Length: 132
Image (tube, rainbow, N blue to C red):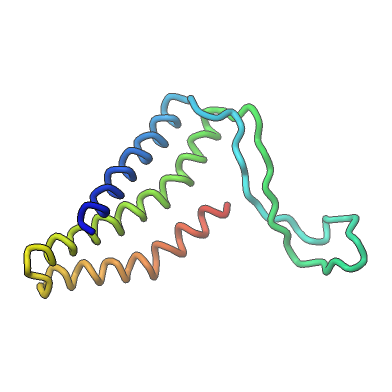
């Protein structure tokens, strides 16, 4: 398990650097998917059997994205990467202490509390920013 957690940390760092590098250099895709909601009343033609909702999730494709647009996408994408890195790093630290035969320490209690904190605040925060 320690090896798997180490691999996840390494892959997460590479993806994070890749994401930031593309934003800095302005390279990468020229098409960007933008997720947003529109008012359900703006949707005009619907079949009779479809129930109209208050808002509709829509994905638009932005072609010929500018460098600023790529920075915004990188900022959106780096949150989930950072969260996964934090979980993997904490898990790796816990697995290392278990492997060394000393799992019941104050340090592991702090690590488990940090995992709980990430679950309570990090996941909803990153999830809401990823939908924008």
